[in-house]
Length: 444
Ligand code: HEM
Image (tube, rainbow, N blue to C red):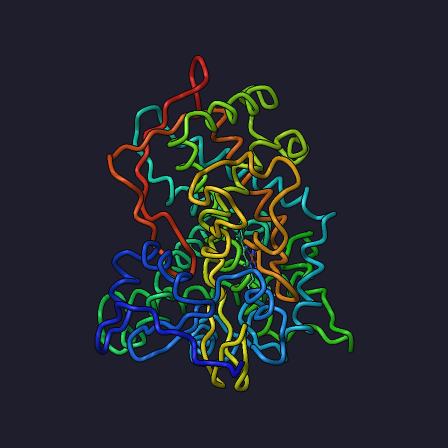
């Protein structure tokens, strides 16, 4: 049968296409798409994109490295802000950068990084008070950005410099998505644009100063930046200055918001599911007895890990991994033109009813025996660009969730459902919650 053009999803408006639906009720809109095909075509303003959501089609797009690339206007926009980092570089640059960055994620280094995770969580929780509302999404983000800055630059950084970098990052992460979907955001001289540009300049200056300091003092601090400085490609060349700064930015950006979203969703889901909460509390009480979780505890926290796995299934932070076709191509009998933006929707993939019975239900125990179906669970992507920080992110989320659950029971402070915010990362949006102490006596 000759390939046909993928069906256009119904409900698009003139000019705006499906953008209003995507902005006002994003997940509900996404949920309607598989019924119209895989791939299915949607329109976002003037742009057409193809949404892919089945195990075979997603796998094909992520592994066919000559037919699909990280090119096109979307990635050009991301690179304009982030540089040519490992997570956004075209495939031609990818093997070299991956070879250089990968050693920083050797399993042997994880226990060392985990110390920063435990310390970061302890410092964060020391500020929580019984009955004082915290925005859990924001707190999770504070934790993961602090851990990212510490694991990259280690303790050599003055606390003030670390906080300044973290704050700049905060503004950048919020601003980048807006600029990717709404290029006009950069044309108008708004306070938001000024703030964004100042944060970008602060970030570049801060990172450049740190790199210069490391070089000048020639110190190996056993952190990610020391590893990147020492790394050589197969021709024995180190990373150029600009490349180094781009990788640093990428590692923080790729790691911090994804992991914080996973943690924030987990805290919310646990608060809403008493049975899961009970099992989680039983596990952490038996293993930790109120102390913070450490690297050595991880093998003893299987239920906590399943909570994170299930939160990553229901709300994959990297919900939409996109590629651009390099030539006219065929995908599952559908014809795609050259230059088409193809979005692998991991959110839809991981909710397919034939792969996950009762796909919308939060059930950590579905990960208990045998794990998830092959090809149906890809929160860290697949193929050559699969997340190198997967074990890092999982360790951080599990340690933080266990430590929080050992000390605090969280309850939503405002009634009503979560309003997910799908930007580059699928975040639960602000989540004010009330911490209730689970320890007898004074806490902190
Ligand atoms: C729960 C947490 C995380 C999730 C869900 C996640 C998800 C993903 C996904 C889906 C990709 C593939 C993107 C693609 O194919 O284009 C990816 C790539 C990447 N991630 Fe993660 N990630 C997480 C944590 C981290 C952490 C902690 C780091 C670093 C410290 C990190 C660094 C990266 C980098 C550098 C890439 C690009 C890899 C490449 O293109 O070779 N991620 N991540």
